[in-house]
Image 1 (cartoon, rainbow, N blue to C red):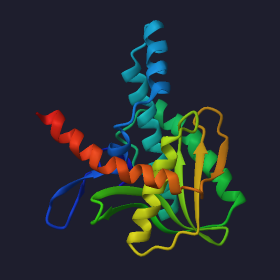
Image 2 (tube, helix red, strand yellow):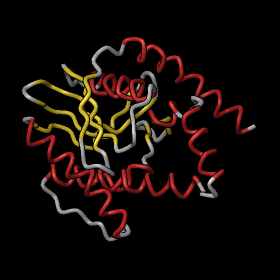
Image 3 (cartoon, one colour):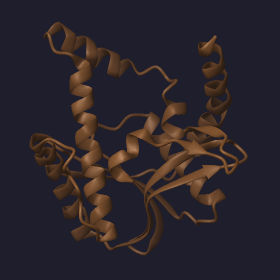
Image 4 (cartoon, rainbow, N blue to C red):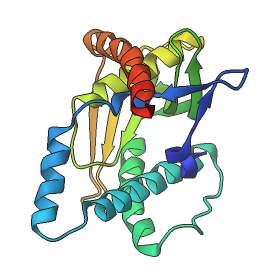
Length: 212
């Protein structure tokens, strides 16, 4: 479910665990993140607390969108009011986007796996956006980063191998500070998909080596 998205584990039918998309992408170095953490450290701020708070806000925003699309009531008892209020700013940005586009959801927060390449992922939204079968990924961060292309390329493959046609890949950044949305088309993903496939065995090897 959306509110537990951070803790998702993917397994094959026989119970064998497989890596998630974000875990695989996590092997990449992120210079921008390192620089951000360094700046916070200089200011005497614990970057882990800032990161965790931002992650919680993003999780709540995703959960609110999930409940809205599924016409379910959101249970926010586990979260602070401050984080809920910030998440609602991002959620309202999604509602603004929804008012300007026709959405027909087929899958929301759907966990899918590729049994051949052995990885999994959680799809934020798959359905029709303005009449096209679309993978729509939600982001609540402050910007767009190259690894996001890898992520949606991996998600597109998960949909396709599970029998879902994808006519468009889109990313929706919903700003938790300004309440604005930024809509992006990411349909040229051949290089990103090629890179992600190369990273799958590397991530697997890294896990083995790090255990030793």
